[in-house]
Length: 346
Ligand SMILES: Cc1cc2nc3c(=O)[nH]c(=O)nc-3n(C[C@H](O)[C@H](O)[C@H](O)COP(=O)(O)OP(=O)(O)OC[C@H]3O[C@@H](n4cnc5c(N)ncnc54)[C@H](O)[C@@H]3O)c2cc1C
Image (cartoon, rainbow, N blue to C red; front, side, top):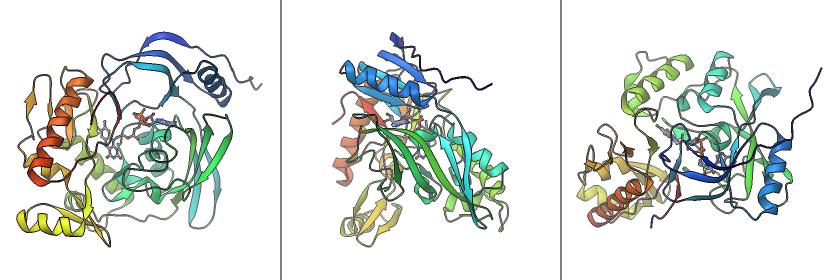
């Protein structure tokens, strides 16, 4: 017997929002609900629209810095399901509901002979958030595999399917962070994966940690998990949002001047006229790596990661301000924040 989907919503007032791995230790959402199907999502959107509430969709909560009250409705997207849509000789299209855990999805694909996502193993969070900042790691980005993204338009409740081009993916950005910021709730992502292994080992630290010259996708998955475990603090133990700053993209002439003055600064080609600078190097060379300021600090193995020992979102933002300002004074380079901030940061 197929049970009818429940459309009943549990909307609670003043529920403590404590995403498992965010910095939002003491945040309180004015309204909170978790939706398991599209009908519930539609009801939640109607509730927010009818009551003029700000809507904050969340997945795993791993990329939120909350330093102010969260007014309005915090909507946990808990839609589940993995479905094969189509396949040909070379590729397979798999649709993942937005609430599927990212790393579990990577593992599922590898175990089922669908390749490409291995370099993105262990990135925290859920599928629905992955397109927002076009998650990337170790030389691979989500956009390399996106077939389409299903959304529900917040203002109208209309369901839409966006193509990879529609999503306007870029380095840690997409249409969802730009012109369509706060316009949609993502409900599912369809990825096109390879049926035969195609590995990407261009990233230097990945190359050096592989024990073979001819790695399989499983070797890459394991190497990436190993590097991440050894370098990044587990948000369950020490709250953090991963990289706090993006690697700055600058014009080539700016990069050339920096290279002359600081020959050790890692600089990567980005486009014919732009280069990407290693933000971690800039932060480290301003003396912040491993520093502790009260209850917050910078991780001792990765200068891009701000850690929250026992502080709050405001303390993290104060440290982020200080880092931005010193990097600007020292290198004349402006750092941009990667996670979503609820609070004030200039
Ligand atoms: C230790 C650590 C390591 C990390 N490493 C990487 C890395 O290597 N590469 C990388 O790219 N990122 C990395 N991140 C960042 C993070 O994993 C990604 O940003 C991830 O996509 C966040 O997923 P989430 O479900 O937790 O999103 P959340 O934190 O819940 O939300 C993030 C943003 O997406 C929005 N959002 C979430 N779900 C939806 C939805 N269904 N529809 C519309 N909007 C939505 C939220 O409103 C918010 O603006 C790291 C984070 C941590 C803590």
